Image (cartoon, rainbow, N blue to C red; front, side):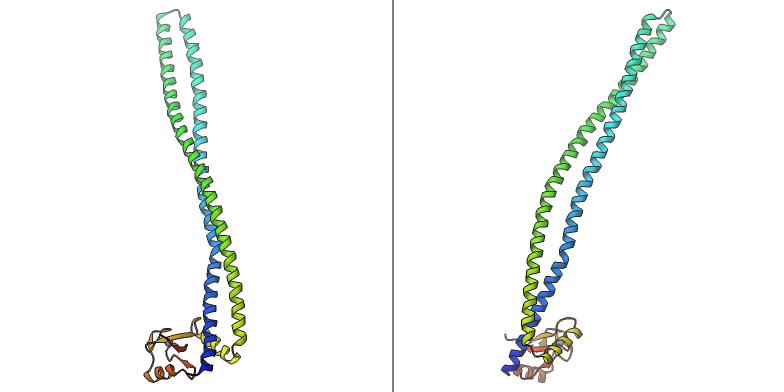
Length: 239
Ligand SMILES: [Zn+2]
């Protein structure tokens, strides 16, 4: 095994490791804004439920107030009809007044029934508004904490990225320019990963068997070899 080649190759391998890690950190960083907007959307949906329930509550309250006013009007009419009843002269007038009072009392009772139903509904909806408001408060706290965690993760990912960039610069400084050029070209042509390990004569970059002679040469590793199928730079697995 050519020790010098081995050393050069190890640098390329390190470079590849750093680049793969860099790509994964960059992908994580790119995902953070989406996580934050998802959290905002969750909170907004929860606040929307409160607005909806509050709207329903004021509708019922408004209806209730209208019914209350209706009831007062009917009550006033009942009082007037009762006064009229006391002043009637004929039996016919008396009967008709009684019927009028009876009708008014029936419609008052109908309005009062509806008011009671609305009071019940008002209680239920008010309770649901309160519950939903509590949920929003709780969720808002949770989301603030999650956002803070995301911001911390983004910070540490950025630090990691800076470290990786430094590391990459250090490796590149010691790799021969010609070898680096080969590495970059292979990387471009093979979808981002330039170097593949070969295990039991199989290139793990493309899972195709190497020709026996090539595998034999690879085990000696005294020249740079390229997989005939995926054209990646190859090296023998150590175990
Ligand atoms: Zn291959």
